[in-house]
Image (cartoon, rainbow, N blue to C red; front, side, top):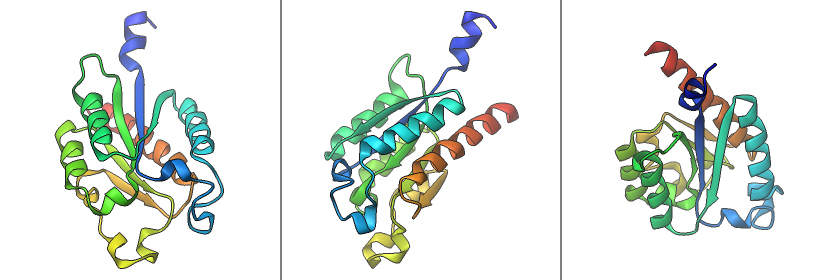
Amino acid sequence: MSATASSQDHKTILVLNGPNLNLLGRREPDIYGHETLRDIEEKTRERAKQFNLDVIFRQSNHEGELIDWIHEAGFAPKSRVKGIILNAGALTHSSIALADALSAVKLPCVEVHLSNIFKRESFRHHSYLSPVVIGMITGFGAFGYVLAIEALAYHLNHKQSSS
């Protein structure tokens, strides 16, 4: 394979984590589990390698920073990001701006929730993100990120083979 073909096949996944996810392992472990965000990052990177994917893993407690990262992934020259995994935390239920950013960049996105949001308070049952993502993974804890990598890898390969 030539160096040109190799660089064209290179795929990067942007994994974004919203407010309070930096507290995983300490914050309500009965709901969110005992694994830290660093633990989740390691598992995500390990699974991504098996699909020949690179991962950019980020967390912010600020909505605007998450939006800036989404814009950068979709519109920055030379961006290699081919898909997004987003655990927006509580912003899932309140941020039209995040949904608009995802819609604007037109990158496939998988929405992830550690807990089953449909077994929790009723305000958590609505997601502003769901209408603009390719799918949602909810209730599998940290393993949800691994499932999201698998889902994006499948989507990217299926999309590529059908074009």
